[in-house]
Length: 121
Image: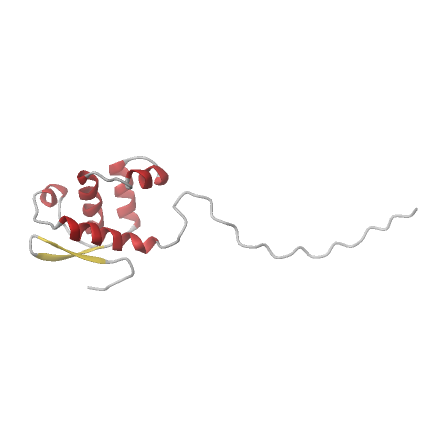
């Protein structure tokens, strides 16, 4: 398996699987949990177990697993390991701005000097 920043491993039913945060995974999480990115961040400050399962499923799909949500719900998964793996996967976002938020504009180059206007007194 190719390891990228933000990739994480988790064991599901005794099988090692990769978690990867992809745009598709982010979209799936947003669709499943609703709201915009800010609302999603607020909700995830105190997630419910169902939120963790939905996020874990999206990241597993991003990592290439063909695991259905129903099968994941019935699987043997260590919750502490899942939480750590989810945190590692989300570290891929780093200090990047949240999607949909205005980005800070890069410094514009200084304007060329304007010719002085001649005003006769």
